[in-house]
Length: 389
Image 1: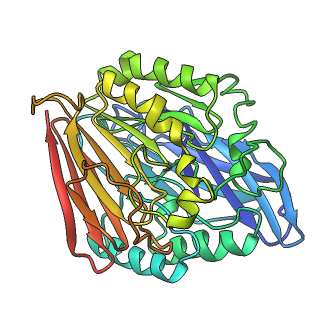
Image 2: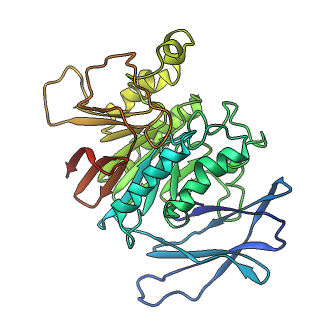
Image 3: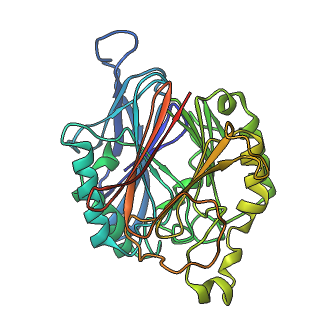
């Protein structure tokens, strides 16, 4: 599985059922501006972690890749290697296709149905250029069976996009414990810890982006995406958010997006858990602190999961304003497989569309337009809107 890691790097993780000595990642890129492929191959020694006797995990970082239009890679071990995979890199003027999903945890059969509809949406010769996963990819991060049955196996059977469509992963409450500490038996998402300590990435800053633990940024075509950790508010994250919102990279982007697992405005949940268990306060800082910054610094779109259904509202940045020329859109996309939330616990009077079913979103951006298309698991359109620049 390949993850976005700043604008010029990718993080790749793979696994074998027995120890593979001498494992490394081989990668190379199509040169620019030449039309001829580059012959310069790079071999990166894999970092190794034994999960158990039949699960051996390896990881490596690709990059920097510069202005390459395609990046190719495969993992190798002595005389053996995997299939070659290729990542297509789009510039700001090209059409960039982004698959948006969230909350497939504990619903592998539904997730497989969703992935079947996704395959039909993209057709056999088109894949998304990136995956924006807005959290809760599985139920229990410490269970290998959940990783396999709820995430890896459905993705592999459902098109294998995770090999060639880099994933921008937004941490959810099921994806890591709140301690956010390394070596806590979280067998895969500990990739966020220590990965900066390499020769090419020796600090938090990467070319055209930052990647620091669970909050980071990514550029997807003409869109700039800020990823936030809704589970763990901190002064460090607040400073990061305000700095990134004010940055020239974000402000000059054609489309400005924030992705955070817990939405600022939730309407559907289990009433008992919401009121008696205090779950209404989960992620409350997203609404009370972060949302004011979203509005102040011209965020176009806030994408969240957590609530297991679909809602989308386009409102004015200033709630007291009647000026229709300055909108911000909030979208909840928590419908990739988890048990649905059907009971309303709050009313914010801001959502234009509510769909209480499973779904996915196709997000497309180019230099002039953002196109949002939400479909249910049968492939029927449930919502769509455009932002034109």
